[in-house]
Every structure is written in C-alpha cells, then in structure tokens.
Image: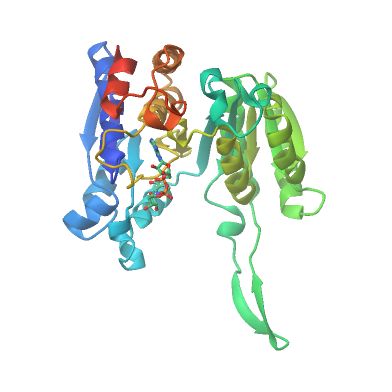
Length: 352
Ligand code: NAD
C-alpha cells in the first residue's frame, strides 16, 4: 500500500492539490494501491489549532510513505509571532522527517520556450535536475554568530560537511542520474574551500559504485555561468546546501514558468515530501486561475522516487506534454492575449 499524506495548505494550495489528487484517484482506479489522508499545515493549521505543524499532522506525515504538499503562507499570517508563521510548518516538517535531499528538476517544454528570458535555442527542451543537500553546510554549521573583536563587529559562519553527509547525498544524485541520461556533474569550490575538497573526494569515491554514470566536477562560479550559457549540457547537478540554494533558483528561472516546476525532498529511505516550487499565490487564490501542473508533476516525481512506479510517472508526464502540445494553457503560461483555461479545466485536460 502506498500511503500518501495530503497537506494542501493555504492560498492556491487546496485548488492545485485537488487536481493532483484527481490524478492519483485515476491511477488508483487503474489498480495502484494508493491510500490518501488529509491533514493541515501552515496558516490553515494555525487557524484550526494555533500551530503551523500540529501534532496530528506530524503523526500522519511520519507514518506516510510520501507527502504531497500544496503551499503555505499568506498576508493574513505575516504579522503572527515567528513560531506561528506558516513557513515554520514547512521548516519543521523538513527537519523532523530528516529530508536531506532536495531534487529540483528544471524542465522547459519546447511549447513554452517563449516564457524564458533566454534565447529559444538555448533553452527549448531543457531538462536538468539539481540535487541539493538540504540539512547541512554553512546554513547549520557551528560556531556561528556576530560578536565584537578588536573594537569592531564581526560576523561568522562555519562551512562544514562530514563524509557521511556527502556520501548519502552523492548516492541520491547518482541514483537520480542512473534513472535519467546517466551524467552527473558535482559542483564545489575545491580551489578555495577545504570543505568542498572533501566533497569532491567523497563524490569521486562514491562514483566507483555507479560505473554506468559519467561523473564530472565543476567549480561553482563556472557552473553559475554555464547554466545561462549552455544549460542543456547538464543532466543532473549535485551540490551542497548554499551553492544548491542559489543554483536551483537560477536553474528554475531559466524556464520562466514557476507554475510548471515540481520538487522532491527525500530522506535516507526515499520517503519524500513532494511540492511545487512556487508559493501560495494569495493574489490569485480562489479564482480558479492557478496552474496545477507543477503539483501534478510533483505526483509524477513521487511515483518515480518514492514508489518506483516509473511507468505511472511517465504516464503523467506524457499526459502533460500532450496537453501542452494541444495548446491548452493556464493563464500564467498563455501567450499574451491568448486563450487560457482555469485550474479545474487544466486538471480535466490532463485526466482525459
Ligand atoms: P508565489 O510563488 O506564491 O507567487 C509569485 C507569483 O507567481 C505570483 O504572482 C503568483 O500569482 C504566481 N504563481 C505562483 N504559483 C502559481 C501557479 N501555480 N499558477 C499561476 N501563477 C502562480 O510567491 P510569493 O508571492 O512570494 O509568496 C506568497 C506566499 O507564499 C508567501 O506567504 C510566501 O511566504 C509563501 N511561499 C510558500 C512557499 C511554499 O509553501 N513552499 C514557497 C514560496 C513562498
């Protein structure tokens, strides 16, 4: 049985998740053993319980094999004390479930290439995956702080990775590459930072277990440049938390369509949290105009990475390609002045 916790969240979250759930229901009626259960996270959880990540949600999420999340947040919650902010719910679930591996594909369907700020030829057909380590690096390293030294303020952080942390994210990246074009580029700054020399050494060691995957290394400054110069040279990129933060945003923006991009955050047993990369879009919530495709594509990632159901994952991805080829668009991806359909109608198109 595939146990999926469904956390729709706030804003457009319930609208887009509803369409993804319809896709899961179809797969269920076709024979996949899927069990869905809903729980609250974010602002709606604060409204109901006073907490953005209530105990009941934590219990459900801990017991589930995978979690489908819409988005959290909204202006109504921006004045709450920090511990009650919806985004705290997200940080809590990632941390408590030890979701250390963040997978963010950046895919640009040829039909949508005009949405990118780069030239058509550079990005049409782009399909890369950034694997970012999510629970270590300079974001969590100790010591950290600000203090007075010699009569002036200094700020400091610690970039730190243990070999076990590097090894486990490297395995995730090699396995992802093995399921794709079998090319992995590891990004570091080994010419300056010892921490990332260790990163390069350990990734190189792990590579021996994946002879079918071609490993290369690139310095982060060059990687940032190559991503805009010739992004299609990449298949999978793997990097640490801070470099990955920056490069994954850069890569997703190559596509220019925030409503199209899914993501996964995995633990050591490939349990995962799947969500679109965009937020709760309060400006369009409740208007049936949000694009549900990023959330539906998150379901495809869930089937691939947590449940090993490659065929079902591809079925969803093919359906979306077909819908786009037919010219069906939500407002965010329509040509200026062009026709577009609502959230539910886009769900209908994918289902049919
Ligand atoms: P956003 O991603 O919600 O919206 C940015 C812009 O993109 C908006 O104009 C929005 O209408 C549009 N957009 C986003 N998703 C879309 C979709 N599926 N279809 C069509 N258009 C879409 O970012 P924001 O406005 O900076 O943040 C809004 C709220 O979301 C804030 O409270 C923020 O904290 C929260 N947030 C949550 C997450 C998350 O849940 N993972 C991520 C980012 C932001």
